[in-house]
Image 1 (tube, rainbow, N blue to C red):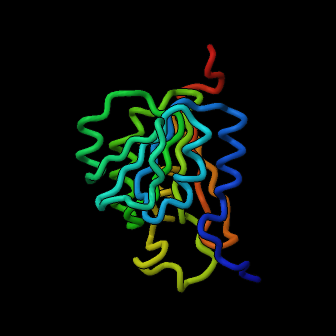
Image 2 (image 1 turned 120 degrees about the vertical axis):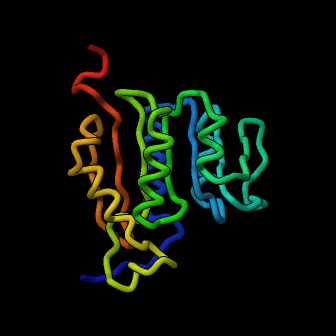
Length: 177
């Protein structure tokens, strides 16, 4: 397989297109790091929330932006609003991805809310280190296969570098019924 050159976030444009199509109110990103995706998406939504365990000087201050310097468990304990789009891109180890998913998916709107898991289909073994994708792909597989997550639909898109999973929270096929 030919590996395309790594971009900062190869699915950022796809996420932006979904923002344009669905017009979400609240976007939450867990694991902001350099802010490439967050700063790209934030101007397109009414409320953009950045969550990271470290200060986020890279996040551009805008009137609609909130920063939470805290582990995701602490953030989940104080958060009470619905989330339309959730991007989980923090600790990529399977257990951490599942913990973030379990903590924050209850806030995602049923039927129309989307959850994105980053780095869930790496294209080569060297990306399986904790420095890159770790075993985040296993978290996506658990969500797909485990009966506990029966109210979630998931599709994992491969590569071109490390892939992404898109998850819809839906306890039924037609969200309006």
